[in-house]
Amino acid sequence: MKRMILLISIFLALTLTAGAQTMIDFTSLPDTGTPQAIPENYAGLHWTGLDYVSCMMWDYVNGNIEWGDGFMIGPEAQVAFAGGPMCYAKHGGNTNENVCQASIAAGVGPNALTEFRPDYAVMAVGWKTDGKQFVTVDAYNNGVKIATQRFNLQVAAQKYKLVFPNSWGEVTQLVFHPSPGGAFVMYVLQLK
Image 1: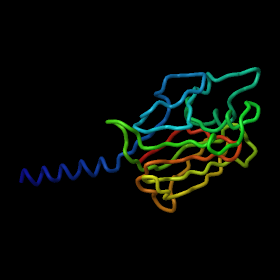
Image 2: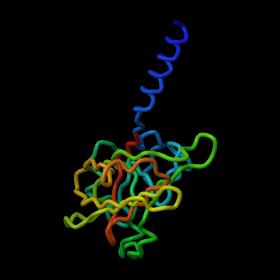
Image 3: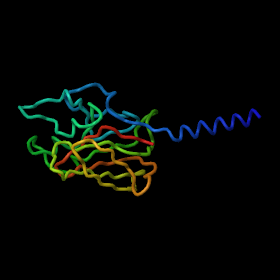
Image 4: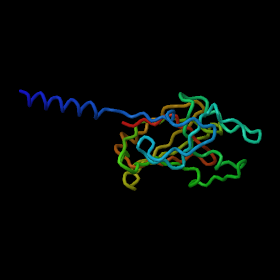
């Protein structure tokens, strides 16, 4: 009888943890009014091309407001973003896709995730609000592209389900490509 109870307990524990979700936001990072790279292994992942900033602290440079509308209409005051200044001529940038893309990948080290299961992202446009902004998300598993999905971005943060056509399953990398000259703001990344 004790073995049966132990087996049932183990089964229930595994069932409960299998449905566990991880919400990644950027509020636990140090406040900053200057964009900073997301640290290595933040939430167990490797971040490339994504910076974070405390929106209310990010102000003006040479009389120009640095943030766009999408930075201010979402659920968090500290956000990640990609694209933007390096993709805009006013900052001497260009629309080179490799400069503007961003990646979230399996991390390195003892507490890193070796793979992850994306559920959704809460995102908005960065600067341009012409209604033509989008982000394309490619999912990879150990270097093999397994899915692509495109989302039309809004000024207000929206929840975008990361599913193609069903669950993408386990991935080792997500690559985000903002529309040419564009940018996106990420408030939350939810993992299953």
